[in-house]
Image (cartoon, rainbow, N blue to C red; front, side, top):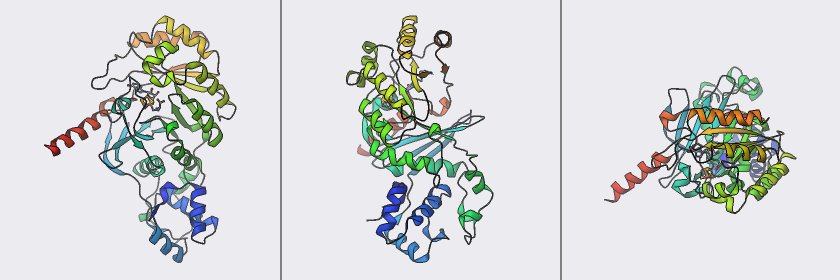
Length: 380
Ligand code: SAH
Ligand code: SF4
């Protein structure tokens, strides 16, 4: 069977080339071609010996997910819909800002955790994404955004170190995608076996070379897996809190019944010993009349006092049949101010990409409906 080299991090590729009787530096060359330059054709990997290129041609391929559609919002947010087979689609969103470009990546098709305010959660779980499908989202975005130079423009006869223009720009750290957040569809910590190699590729200097501080995993709070992430690949951590007490969090996020707040906060404190940043980001979705009152602010201040953290308020983004309403702007401002006044660094996330259904929590809801309708139409 042909191996998809997009599935392999440095360690995996080194093992793969060793099985072909090759030295480890071949793995580094392959990483650069595949990830830095976005090359999929072994024939164009000019500094790799012809005999190895032929072996690769027979045993391997480089296959990113298929792009189904690609849309740009009025505010510049860009969204790709990617086919992951069997009628499943996932979404990737690029959010350009003045000083950085953030790519929001999915880790599962659907999600099993059924948070009540989340469109992905309402769909149920389909399957875990592969390493190639996770890191492939960055691969695709880099190419589409012009960061990975199209090697078809090259005549191919030179070594990587001699490359110029766009290549240098990438190597120098002036990246179009400067930050990655695992905040798309799915729970990253329930797909850790594939998320970790994908993270390692994002950090690898021969691949994307992103800083650990600029790669963020967002989790609903899978306590043992927070410890596992700290061991295997510590990056910045965001935790979806959304409620300041167990009673409310149990209702909004069923996972809280398994890992209640006290255990979650303790896991956050343990994580910080290994983390590249000295705080956890707590995400808090603002639901009108549900978690946005003065009493909630007070409880949240108390909770936030128990672990070094910053709070990010997210205005709720509605989706078809969602049972909640976004807190009014004034309520969000007041809540934010209360927390700040108590000395807790708090920001409110600007909503981006709403017109193309690319805002937090809206991903793939409508697509799923469409896919479902197509299936019904076909069956009829
Ligand atoms: N499963 C992970 C990561 C994906 S969700 C997690 O839950 O953290 C990314 C973020 O979007 C989470 O903070 C999630 O709670 C939030 N979110 C989900 N639905 C939302 C909605 N409708 N409006 C605003 N934010 C939402
Ligand atoms: Fe899953 Fe995160 Fe949505 Fe909850 S908020 S259902 S964990 S994707």
